[in-house]
Length: 522
Image (cartoon, rainbow, N blue to C red; front, side, top):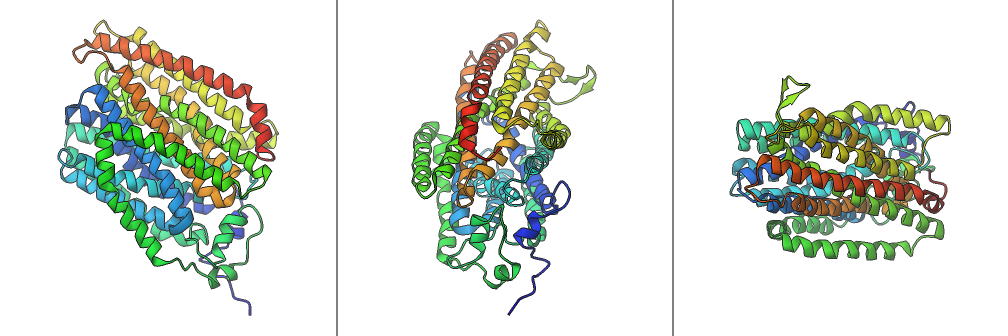
């Protein structure tokens, strides 16, 4: 007996055979992620400034706290991806993560001074469940060798940055000028909008993101036929997942129970050090264990993915000075005039400039990749990564040159500072959305969530290193003059420019070797 497919639950084959440049489901995920990123980047943009000015931490201590907080956020994306792969499914994981983020924002809105680490801990765990899984669902919208995939991730990345732009500027400005309670509360409100958007559009995803289940045909659709012919929709509808409920409830209870532990580890950064020493090697051991199940070609692709992951650690360690040392540099050493006359909050510019430039240039760059692919001149993933580091080097050299556009009191030009963010944006666009896409192309389907989690775990190590680097850059005397702070910070940025240049040249030099590991993946 043949069943009629439900048009409200399209098959994977129908979804992946979309016409035009972008599938319609990409737009639904775009808006869900946009509001979630408002929440995340709004919170991120407030952290170090709030710790220094409201919690009265020293600058180097605040940098370490910032690095620890952000490291745990990204470390939990690996854990969230693992539980989504094995138990919850991407959709349920995303929803649970959103609920935890809303609770965390609510706690901070109530009393950000007394309950700072409690609220942050809820947000850390929630982001871990939300962030990697929506990116993996974007990858599932495309067949394995669809040349439109990079363009789709670039568009999705612009959605991330619309949220980051609005949240990054609005939250810090509201906190500084009006109320920190309102600023943290606003992050929770927009997270609620994100979840409602996902709930009302998730049917269009068909089988994408459903929970895995023994004996179910849903799991093979996502783990064995991404990029090939999917089973009929009748098969999908006739056999829904039947997870053991206690597994699901154990994940929920465990994620709540771990929050007090996260509070202690974030508040006392020496525990963060121990965590980072353990989680990376443990993750690699797990990956090597899983790799035994795959053939030689698949293992080579996984090693290529690891190469990108390792290099991304260095990129994020430099790039994420934006939330740490650059935030303090903006607060103390920048004027408040753009183009010589427009009065703005320099911290708001620090938080939002990169996102604004991504919104403008990400879709354009994505279309350029598609056009270059048609002419068979598109640079491969490794070259794009190398270009990302070269742009990063240029940006930090411009941050260094702000000292030459400063007053005798040490107040530098916001225009030159913003120009550096324009350059750093091109570096990010050559690396981050391309890296997300590479993980979905290089990883076997059964390890999609795990590899996406490892990509974000690399960001955790980058954030962790960013805190250490930021603490080193800001280790001048707390009583230093504004001019001396300018010299101290810009000296540090010059060193980062040199290291980024070396990394970019090295990556381009080894590109032929990595290309061989990637096999048929461009």
